[in-house]
Length: 335
Ligand code: SAM
Ligand code: SF4
Image (cartoon, rainbow, N blue to C red; front, top):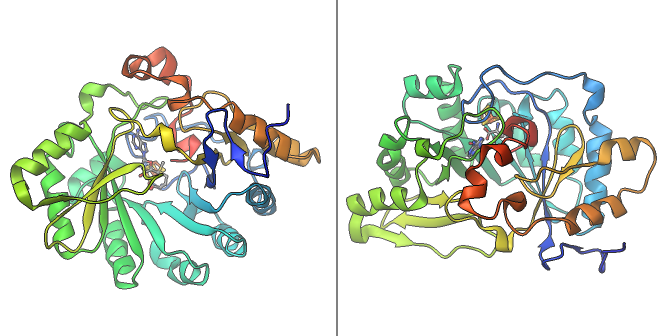
């Protein structure tokens, strides 16, 4: 079936897709509890993953189909040996290029980011305390991550900080995170804890958008200002009057934002996913290696996108382990 319409990647619900998230690797220098299963993931031979030229060629095909923004993610994208080369090559495409990182290696990439025209950098920061960060990431990365966040701010990057909020772990720091925006011009985003294979998800460990905002509103009252969200924004944004930074909540669990979703994903092993939660994938890498035209495969994959969270429409379905554990772990999808 031909679902192509003027090279716009439309699904059957009429949503156009112009944003691609590419995972560069399943490997990571951290071991975040919410992302990576405790036992780790099985490391597979390099041949099963996209090589430099394959990342670029597949990305180019997406760009020819209307993709306007690419975010590099992983795993940790900066642990890949050819990360600089991939960034330099992708920067030549007519797209906005962005990156999500845990920040540990960022100081080695400042020039590369600048030359590539990358302005927006997302950094994971789940705690402002060293010991707690180590408990969450299972590594001692706090000092490196924090100093690199300050380096990015100093170098005038637009810095978004991502914290997955978990009960009894870092929910007592929400007001500290908001306070961090007083002097630091960052956009702090509080993410509802989402279920992926092996992350021992249980919503009783999560904090909802409402619970997070109740805490903030109780403390800051009338000083909390709602900001205008853009159409495809996954976050609901706020700021405290007079503070340099802003903050937001990403509510994939209690308040999904699927209606305006414009995102597609490419895993490090070259599989296309039309949703973070989709259980079906299209193997673009094998098709590419066989010399096939990827475009019909991409159109077909987009067309089949489910209306909400990979088909888990209700909170009950989303919470059902027999459904949500069918997916890969986050580290193998690319967050
Ligand atoms: N290593 C990079 C980093 O940490 O930002 C990029 C990859 S990471 C998988 C991308 C984002 O996914 C991070 O902000 C992380 O907090 C988020 N993430 C991972 N597992 C999650 C989960 N179970 N629920 C919500 N967000 C999650
Ligand atoms: Fe690594 Fe990022 Fe996953 Fe943490 S969230 S384990 S830093 S990929």
